[in-house]
Length: 459
Image (cartoon, rainbow, N blue to C red; front, side):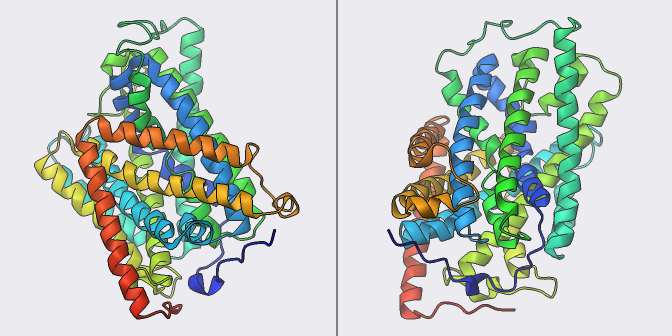
């Protein structure tokens, strides 16, 4: 069969190709290891108890299918537009639009979730300082970093991610030692057994588990600014293996060391764990680490969100001004526009502080899942259109092929439906998100048809 044409490179002209495989992986790891694991794991434990371990194992498999599908597509079509480009090429313009726009909305809201989490962590040290002040300070810091060159950004994100990654690995090692030496009695069957909330509870908790893994798709986005094509396969595998070890290992240790009914979202369960086992000063150190993790997650998320908006602008789906680059090679206006989730965070901590994190997680999840669904569907079409010889030439291939993407698509759809049904408020926010995307597509498509010439690259 004839091969598919590569996406026109003119759309993303001007981006600097400066990221190494390690930096690409750390952007994805930085975007993943944030509130999803460090704060959201507490919500998963509340919902399912020790059975949340099964939720994270299922999420790891879903993550594998998405990572492999995106890895193949990114090797064939490296682009900052990522799954939006894949949707355009292998599905239809609507799929390409909702993948970019939905993901951008989800990421922007996720930045707000990270800001809420960071303010939550700071409150343990400075309880008298209002949360919104911390959000303003951290927002200014993020904008300064993201408006610099991608090389500078990559170095900052690499070390921020390395701090939290090293600490969480140390947490897993220390926790395993506590459990195996008998210093801490395993809590897996305490407080109501392994399924204290029922056999279906792991399915309900899978929302938080899948959200925690959200970020693996960022590797495909960074491929548009990778130093060479050889960096992508290494970055994909490094990201997947790192996230799987960290998430599954951490949740096993958390639920073994700490009674599940002591978890919550008022502080990180990692901090609670160190306080529970009474390791001197460890809870304060861990609070610093989870604060770093939240800021790193927000930093990586803002980077990817701005590239999604940049891609929309360069292909005519958003105002052309959002596709302009500053002298450092950063899409300045796309970065500023993508920080709107911080305003949502400010509003929520002022008027709904008790539920701010959960509201933002539910809204961000829908946008992220749309990008996964489009990616998996595009990968199935990609596999069917490519010849065996063309597939063999790719530096990275999915072991399960198109069937892995089909199974992943089904499991992601189940996770999305479950998210909308529990709690039910997520259904209305999800439908509202879809309605906004459909309306946005109709308006943008009409404008594109009235001006068929795509927006030119802007330096």
